[in-house]
Length: 321
Image (cartoon, rainbow, N blue to C red; front, side):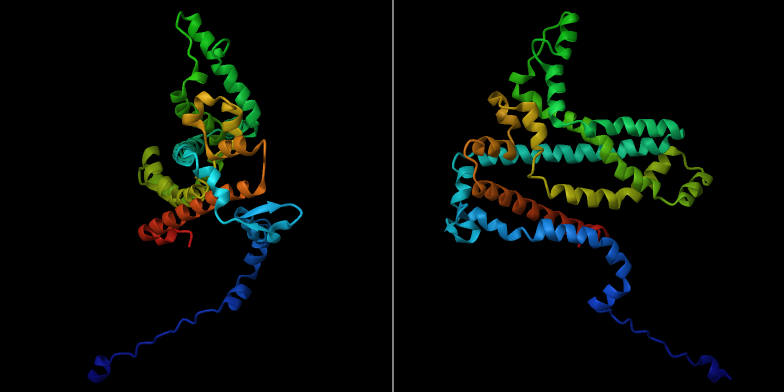
């Protein structure tokens, strides 16, 4: 009997069989079918056109086509580098996009949390609709609104300043004013739309967790700090990783319609897209435009890979791959 008591039971080891790619596709066929429209879209509009990158290295001629045009190497990139403008343009584009991304995400999270705390359903919907409206205003109208606000002679803000006995300001001749104004304009236009993603993520939080926190005596600020913000971590990281991929692609519509051809402001407001447009609008050619697009894409790809590697080292669960 004692011998039986001291005997140890054999340890059962279960081997987990790794599924092949084909078996995984069969197992998750419903999810793959749901993703099929997106897969087809990206295959047609992103992967099939990839060989067209070769245009950036040719002296493209319409009658010869892509593959029979003369190969010129990196000659098409010279117009970006020969004047030394590329460093200023890259600096402006990256810094503006960093401001748009960081300030935009912070304000969007803040707005989403405030919307979640509103108890009145009707007021919440009205507020969301009002914040959504600027997103649908065209950049042409935004440029017109900004001009009517800040015009030195009859702009609304200068009229108010003069009515109080002050001296008007002319921001259209002051390059240092626009690194502050452009991020504010972008925040006004994009915050309402961007906050929807975070608001949806907050609505997806398990209500039982929130109720349990209330029962334990957590106030509103503690609920936000210890429940909502940690639950938003994954959404924030994914959206930031996607955003940094386009950090070298500026908002051409907004910059061009607000700044236009005002060369006084180019030092602090000129981005890659506006410079290329001015350079090529009189003698547009596909090869130079393709060279710029390739430069922006490679730069964005490198940044995404670096950021993803950093995230993977900190917390692999939130990395893209």
